[in-house]
Length: 421
Image (cartoon, rainbow, N blue to C red):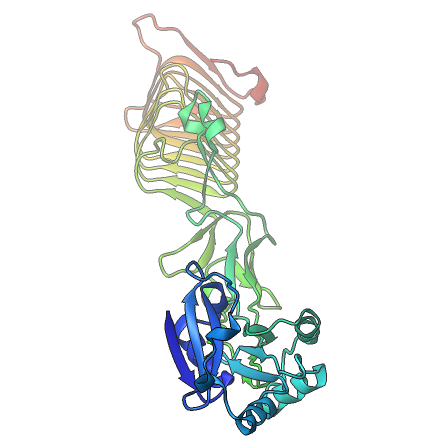
C-alpha cells in the first residue's frame, strides 16, 4: 500500500494519474483520509489486493478528528464538484475528470462548457458525451470531450498507361497452354486517336484543426506531373493536358528518355524467335536477323528481312517483301505480297506477288505467281516448279536436261485462289 499526501483532492488525483496513467481506476483503489496536520492523504492499493471492509468507529482516535473550524473549511472547499481539464501533447484531444463535491456531486453542462472555453477549447466539443458524463455520474475518470481534426494528406498526380510499356502483350497463364509457342506473345496495336496515357489529377490536402481552433496544414504540398515532357514521336498532348493521344496506327512504347512514342515500323533487332513470336502489325516490319520455323509475319505495309528465311513460315504484306538473303521454304513456306517480292534465291517456296518478283540468283522447285515480271539475275536459273505471270519471265536458264519438270505460264491473268503448291 502506498500513501500520497496533498493539499487538496485535485492535486492528489493529478499525482495518481501521473504515476498510474489516465486509467488508474482500472489498476488501483484509492481511499481518501483527512489529517489536520498532514492534509489529505490518498492510500493507494492495487485492485487485486483491495477488499472492501467495514470500519469500526472505535478505531478512530481523537487525534485524527479535526477541529470544527478545520472541518468547516474542508467542507467549504469541497462542497462543489471540480472539473480537471487536460489536453494531449498534440492539442488534438481534450479530457475532463470530475471530482464530486460533498454537497453537490456533479457539475452542470453549462459549467463544463464554460470551463472548456475558459481553457481555450472551442473546437470539436462533443456535447453529447458531456451530457452522458453528467447523466451517468462518471467521476474520477478521464473522459474525452473534444477532438480535433487531422489534416488530410494530398494525393499526388499519377500517370496511367493504356498499353504495355514495351509494346508487347503476353497472354495470361490459361492461354499459355496453346500448342504453338509462337502465338504466346503479340504486338500491342493502337489506332489513330487512341488515348495512350492519362493523367490522374492531383488532389490537394485539406488543413485540420486542433481543439483550440488553430489550423493544421498538410505535412507537404501536392506533386503534379506535366505530360508535355512525355510527348514523343507520332503522339500529341490533348487540349486539357491530361492525356497523350496517338496520331497514327502502330505500336506504342516508352523510349529510354521516358517519352511516349508510336512507331509505324516494327523492328526486331536480331532473329525472330519465341521471345517475340508471331507478328501482326499495321505498319512495316523490319527483321534484322533470320526467320527460322513456323512463324507468321503479317504487315499492313512492307516486310524487310536482313537474313535467311527457312521453314514453314508465312510472310504476308500489303506492300512489298524484301529478303536480303535467300529463302528455304522446305515445301511449306509462303510469301504473299500486295506489291513486289525480292530475295537472293527461292527454294521450295510458294510466292504470290501483286507486283514483280526479282530474284538475285536462282528459283528452284518453287511455285511463283506474279502479276508483273518474274526476273532472275546473275545465274538466272529457274529449275523445277511452276512460274505463272501476267507479264514476262526473264532468266538465263529455264529448266534442265536432268528431267526435272518445269511449268511456265506467261501473260495469264493473275488469280491468287488458283495458286496451289
